[in-house]
Amino acid sequence: MKYQLAIIGGGPAGYTAAETAGKAGLSVVLFEKKSLGGVCLNEGCIPTKTLLYSAKTYDNARHAQKYAVNVSEASFDLPKIIARKQKVVRKLVLGIKGKLTQAGVTIVQGEAQIVDAHHVSCGEEQYECDNLLLCTGSETFIPPIPGLETVNYWTHRDALDSKVLPKSLAIVGGGVIGMEFASFFCSLGVEVTVIEMLPEILGGGMDVEMAGLLRAEYAKRGIRFMLSTKVTAIEPAEDEAIKVHYETAEGAGEVVAEKLLMSVGRRPVMKGYGLENLPLERNARGGIIVDEQMRSSIPGVYVCGDLTGFSLLAHTAVREGEVAVHTILGKEDKMSYRAIPGVVYTNPEIAGVGETEESLRKKEISYRAVKLPMAYSGRFVAENEGVNGVCKLLIADDNTILGAHVFGTPASEIIALAGMAIELKLTTEEWKRFVIPHPTVGEIFREAL
Image (cartoon, rainbow, N blue to C red):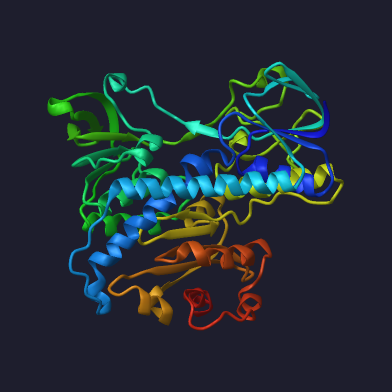
């Protein structure tokens, strides 16, 4: 069986590329060993947002009096919350399968093995292809902490499916995934402790000031944050609890919790599908090197998504998949990472796009920062009683927009406005010419300008 394009991995990069190529008339085969949608749809982006929305709804019910609404006894049903999450995932997986089928894509369920740049085997079948696209995604990284193997710890998968709430939860890792789970369990009344090795949560891309504002908000809600703290060992404690030993600049100590969630990050999947049969050029960190068209060092082999090790975000992978297929089709296109939004779907949300103050200082790029309370947006005030927020724009000397960062819901929905301004290299005057509907929270950008 010969195809013009073979794709390994049915996550955001893979299914986007498959649909794009199929609609363009290419013969496409897509290999997926688990479920279409990849980690993002099945055990990442969508499941967590479904749980977080339930938690947000519960939060709103408990504090409905702020909006002159009386809710006598707000409560929640965790097994039903989990069941709803599973229903949402099933619906979306079926939707992706339907779109791929409509585009004429051949879907092969199973673990693909690379033979060479133009041959892939799966089971007893071998498939020939003109082009090969690798989109194998990423997996949870579990650090080699002494004693970790002696306890029954959670990964994000376990946390997503637990139908019983622990009384207390220790989360090792204060990144995006760790903070979203901290938000969910805090809203449901769990005593949460976040242990982070860096001096601030959400390190590695989010604006430090916004991260600090989010941490302060959740500290008021009862989450205990332990920053600049290194976990040194883990051991079982009494009553099936878990004891986490740690070190700080001030000395050593321990935290005891009923459950432990390991959330220190993810790493690209490099093993298990014959990647060693392709002599691909790699960077110092082990990521596969690609050019602006997502082409690897081997002609006809493209790499998208987490496998490059560059941006482990679903929306980045989607765009990379499009660029790869457009290149195969002979269309002029290239990948730009100038304006990749980052979002933390806590309550309140934070979002950012483009440069941060920290990245600009590191690059020694001159800029000015404009900060404005979100209260300058009438819509924000109407819908966020008693909650403060901040909008920050980073502007170059030539008045182009370098970065934008928002603390306050719905940051996730409005950050794309700033992303387009950054990608198009708009100046402040050019951006102000766009008409934004009133009243919307997105008007905060016009106010800041």
